[in-house]
Image (tube, rainbow, N blue to C red; front, side, top):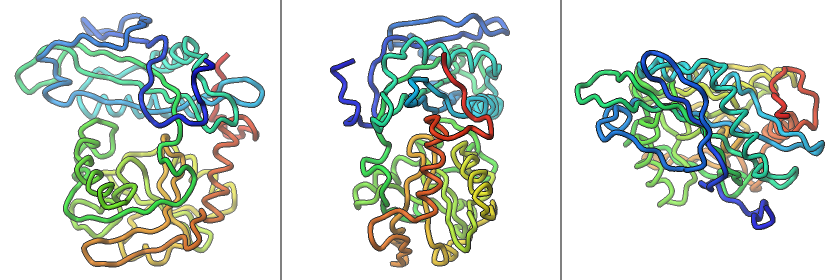
Length: 339
């Protein structure tokens, strides 16, 4: 793979050698299949195209300095996709099929796992979609589960540096009691217009407020929000927020560091009390927030005046990455080594 500049990868699609697929037909899941084509043939009346029967996951593989490739908390991704399937009335993926498909996809494409300290990783995208033809609004009886991978660079071009975000009340990401707590494409489609507006105005993302009252912090588009003050890690609790595996892990690491962890409603005005703030997720890990502008009230919440991440955010970021790369002991048994 001498033709890949590992240190200059963007977060974008790149064709690799193989992908892994599994079909659900006649009430059961079949065997794993290996494909080299990155094209999928699908019926034009498939429920995944018409009625949103679709869910996906995102996780990463990391190569350590010992040459071993590691996956981070794969079982949690399997559980979350299971819940997404239940939430959209699709056939759930058994955990063993999910895990085996991911492992096989990584093993078959091991030459695309970026080297240690390259700043890149192997991004893994499991996808579940309704493929059976159904014009009436109802679940179908045929599904395709597939896993494909690609080497990627950092999600935000700035890397681990503070970025600025904006608050807008013009858009909702997800409604209470809707699909905000599962990982389906419709949630991301709903965030595209707001995200485009943010980018047009020089911001990296939108910080959404709760859809019902517009009083509480919700999510940062593709990532969970957290704030830090008084040695406390605070992150919003809401039925419309996707349960981030990265955020779950950071909560545990914060407790390990002797911090108090609070998962609760976070009023908008509390932003002014945080010493640090960030967005967290698989793609970005942690993206420190430098400033949040409430464009409708003209209020700015500043968390970094020198362009550097906060001390605690940096400690959490370095600790999590050290575990992912095998540089520190995996005391919580989060890592799966791919042989």
